[in-house]
Length: 253
Length: 289
Ligand SMILES: Nc1ncnc2c1ncn2[C@@H]1O[C@H](COP(=O)(O)OP(=O)(O)O)[C@@H](O)[C@H]1O
Ligand SMILES: [Mg+2]
Image 1 (tube, rainbow over the protein chains, first blue to last red):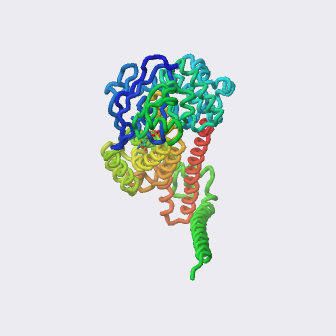
Image 2 (cartoon, each protein chain N blue to C red):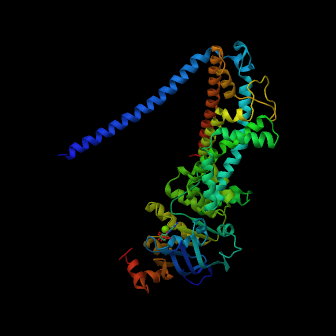
Image 3 (spheres, protein in one colour):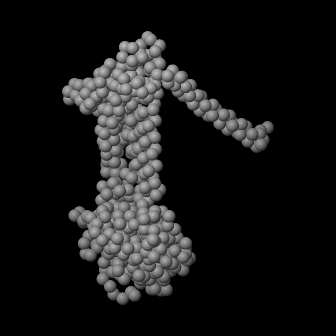
């Protein structure tokens, strides 16, 4: 699975600071197309901060500064003329806590296409997205019920479907399973394998088994520094760095 | 020697005493309100009938009615709502969702808070100078509504800002992450979620507008009017002015008429509040909250 593939998204010497507090320090990280890249590391090491910078979600936090460059399809998404809204249409995101809108299942998925002016074939779009998120069979008879009545795992898959409705090229996931039970977690992990046929996935996780199970590439961070990055198998079985080895063998973190 | 048990007993006693104190203060407030309402009802109820609602004021208590005041108040509150709600809510949206936090924003916030504390007569003076004289609106119900709008704008803005602030930022984040613009996030998620809170603030503010007398007297709302305003440029009177006028007459019968007028005023307030509760209830059903 780790054979050559194009680099779709690339962080180039990216540093991110909250005020004068550096949270990500000169990270260079290529993300390969149709691969799953996981970012692991102890709590507070800057995983989420780095992930949010890939679709400019840090723009909403006051006093965040980013230096370096993040290129998507060879375009710097932080260029002065880059439109963050367009960036987010191509690079979707799923958050840690399942957070459907307090609307119907249907409306949750339909919202992104609707605000983008795509109003025809909405039923097909919704069905398509729900199928991709492996949720269709469970909800097809209750599309117009509240999304908040779904179980946690179903809600998270609904959030994935919602993010897929605009057919993004990249899906960023920030600890998407940390609020879920093992069965729901397994379902989402299965889903990731299917999804990577269509898109590119970057997943932050504090669960090393999960990173080992699902990802093709793994990045290990500590204190804002990218310590090691490479094919998942190499990183887990034959890491170059002492700290990586200690972390993946569970001796700290 | 103070043992632990003794100290604990003392602390429980203080706690119980404080509870009793709070309870009695609450009872006192409710009792005073109850007595007021009871007295007003006893005095006014015999006068409250269909004729009272459909007649204009008169020198003879038996012929006097509240129609001019009631119609004036309804005009006033409708126009005030039409002016103040959009401006107030939009200002709140701007300050919460668009304005960058900083000195300008802080300056505006402090000023709005101060404006909320300005005595209503001052708004009457401003209304007289600007709307009545400068814009030449005369003693019209429109001038009254604009003055009232000034008076309640700070309350609407502050309440709406609080309601908007209470919308979890995670909701905005998700919506932005789906490639929405700020307007789309505000329209489809922030405002619907904030609506119950905004509505509560609006109703409180409008209730205040209904009860205010001083600014209306200042801008020259009349006490004797024998017609119903037919447009925003007509002269008008309002319920509290009519009530005030009746209470200031020597005859006992007019005091009873005033009580009847107060009952009408209270009923208008009650209907408005009930409407707000109903809208909120419907809104919450639609959103599956
Ligand atoms: N909104 C914020 N404001 C200020 N500091 C923050 C904010 N979010 C995160 N940080 C800080 O940045 C560092 C990295 O945080 P984060 O990226 O959330 O780590 P991780 O996801 O790996 O747990 C932490 O030290 C954290 O305290
Ligand atoms: Mg995190």
